[in-house]
Length: 288
Image 1 (tube, rainbow, N blue to C red):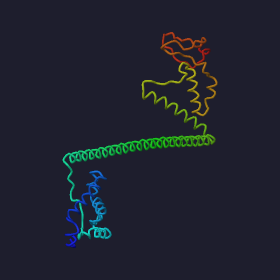
Image 2 (cartoon, rainbow, N blue to C red):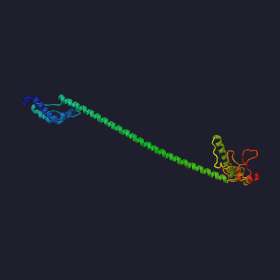
Image 3 (cartoon, rainbow, N blue to C red):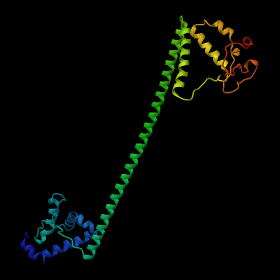
Image 4 (cartoon, one colour):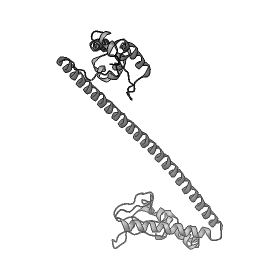
């Protein structure tokens, strides 16, 4: 109260008039918003009421400082009543019990809804992350397999090229060695040595022995052996090879008849004592 005279004679009950005006304005503003908003926007509601009635001070949301132009409006409205209102604020809102229960249920449902939404968003993001991880893993595995196949192919190609170059180099060296003096004799000796060694190793390591395809033709085998012998001695037995041909070598195996029976020279030769048959290097004509 700034002017007792006006407060006493300007209005019958100034405080009641101010309160009624404030309540009317407050009901008008509350009807424009929901009940939930009244708890959230109480400061805004106070500001609107003050602006509407021009009888109460207003303050900002953060600092609660009085606004000078609104103070001037309040003073203009209350000067005829000898009053000056410094502040207006809604301290509490007490809805009925039924409304309060409905609000609590609504708030609980809203919290559950937000929780479910957040949980579903989390599951969705987790599934997306897992799918992205699997996708990246498959892509990396396929790229690794691709690089592995490429590297293996390159390695095999390089190995083939290296072997071919080494083989060509070896053949070139052998060819050059054969052109030198004594090269052919050395090569013949080497081939015969490897031939004999191969058969000796086969006979030592197993019970199964692989024989040449001419096993049913002893004459061919003897001619081959004489050919190797000729290579070893450097061709000194040429006269002997000319006199004895493979068809003049007779003889059969003890276990059975000869594989081929073409003429009389291939018949079994028996002795007077009944001994086993043996190979003979003499021609049939000389025996008779």
